[in-house]
Amino acid sequence: MSKTITVIGSLNTDLVTLTPRVPSGGETLTATSFSTGPGGKGANQAVACARLSRPNPTAPSSITVRMLGSVGADEFGPEMISSLQSSLIDTSSITVAEGQSTGVAVIIVEETTGENRILLSPGANHSLLPSSFTSASSLGVPKPDLVILQLEIPLETVLQIIKTAKSAGVDVLLNPAPAVKLPEDVFKGLGHLIVNESEAAILTSRSVADVEADGFDWDVVTSEFLSKGVKNVIVTLGSKGAFFQSSGMEKGVSVKPEKVKKVVDTTAAGDTFVGAYAVSVVQKGGNVGEEDVKGACRAAGRTVEKKGAQSAIPWLDEV
Image: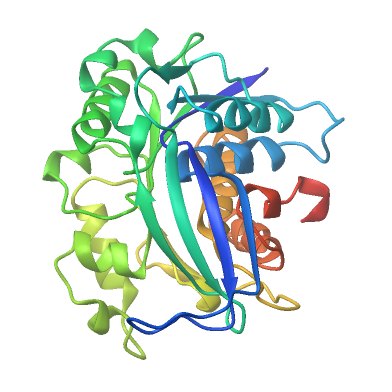
């Protein structure tokens, strides 16, 4: 029986500059290369779900991936929608915001490390209003098996979608990025929470330095989220792998990172992780475990070996 994942979130055009190093204040540095491409955490995660649910572009999938979001009435909008369609995503629920620009992310990638720095201009992404998501049908028809959310659309809208999804009995995966403090009732009954180190620190009122210290006990963090009502918690740790705990586990488990040939660009690694994990969630009816987190690490490992955001996300055969 076919399953449906609805991703509600941002659609951006990425303007990517590859540089030997990040310039200092007031310094002009000659870049290695410049490129544009489709991005946005919402769109990236939709592409990851679609590609990791099938071996290749010509193969069938038992999962339908639907994207809900907004683009501007500019030259970037049609390109964004066309790109999503090329990954076999249902784009019929994407709206065009008149008088708005499509969201833009200016990304600087340091070629020696693959690390990135991002400046985001939300544009049409902020035209998604809470009033548009008050009924179960606003999550898509037929009702999805899983809704995936991030924080690149207005926070009030995200909170309303979570409330509507919970009322409709729809499982929710929240990737709170970029992170801000959230109301406590968000966590009650939340199916899946995926955070990186800095996001975990912000959400639990810790310093980033504390959580990044050698030997930090991630059990303390995951247990805190579980006590608030989250069912499954994952902390992605980049080159150190991930930490996973579900409500049925006494202690969390560390998952080793995937070995990679060379880190080229980390831009969409986290989004690939989310997509791979989400596919496991709907395929297994929510009964995910350590092996699914390992699979998500594996998929993210393939992504960092390539340049770009969506263009770097692998199909299942590549994983």
